[in-house]
Figure 1 (cartoon, rainbow, N blue to C red):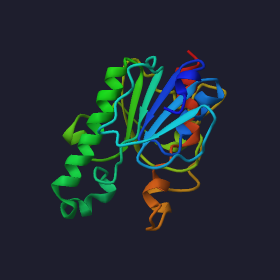
Figure 2 (figure 1 turned 120 degrees about the vertical axis):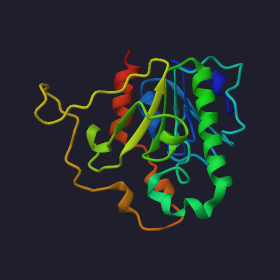
Figure 3 (figure 1 turned 90 degrees about the horizontal axis):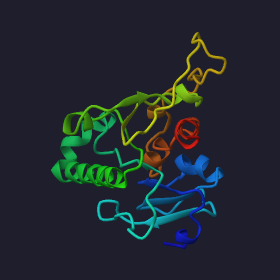
Length: 215
């Protein structure tokens, strides 16, 4: 575990299928510790971020640790997103089944935790195979100047941060003009394309902390 049991701080934030750790950074800055799990080594290391390289389908939260204060999950979307629909038939049933098993493993970890949670995926087939998302947002809604329609399945009291658009009756709008266009179109084919397209918008991660962590 890398000693997370000795560095719990204000509590543990759990983030599944999370290589970058951007989602947990505001929590780390506020004195929490984070446990991230992914098949790839961690990017953006932090002294209170403890990263496990493992398959989330098989991994389960250790019973000897206190329950997490919040859970995030970012199951791989390559075999579920509509942006890759043209290749779904060629990938076959095995790819689809594995992708759904990963989502279900995330769901089980989230629901079992008893903590507020969100499971993230882009517009795709989960609405067909599971249920409609609770929320859909674009990064520009929270200050990152690009679009990428993103779905959230939430539970256990997760609070969706409000989006304040121009003309709303508030002093501090969160929405910005998407001057960088669409994230889906911004990256040409490369080995890192899926990773680059799946990076969590920093503005959204900060907004989630403001809505949930400050409570």
